[in-house]
Length: 252
Image (tube, rainbow, N blue to C red):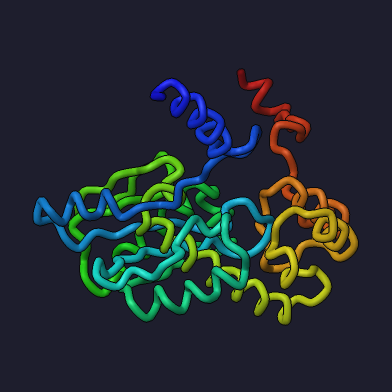
């Protein structure tokens, strides 16, 4: 009898498995934050940025302190959500949480490079929170220069709920900003691609040249600037001919 039951149970167990090639994705949890709360460490913030890859527009960083008793359902890595889901969660997070946003402009990105500008914006977002956190989770490999302890979590926007909430705030804020920049600089299609290097954006960049919102040292922007404003491209110092002073040579 027991053998028959086990034999019948086996096909059911197999059928419960996911189809081949399908990977189960676990949503981010509040487990790490709750572990800190049990140790008496609170507030705990999560922070993330949006816009490191685009050719135009700022990097937008966000820091969020979720209310443990009022966490909106459905918070996930912003990349896993539709635009409609992000907008809805954005409103819920803003209504129930403490948050702050900071920007790194294209000028700062040009000056500092994209990584340093992003870390600067993230630290600024944490510093702008209404209540200083006692612990910070940040997405990525790099910790931030914060007064409290900061833990970098690779893939954190898919693991830590506070980071996922920050990813939604940063993404929605930046998308809205790029739509506003599209009105200021029509023709580039910022409202559609948000500044990323899609074919439509590259074609517009080649046709129109860079705008004031483009990042000067990203390769496609450099190429477009060379095409439209060749005199504005600084020369390569190593390619300039060496000027020799005959008198100085004679003196030697």
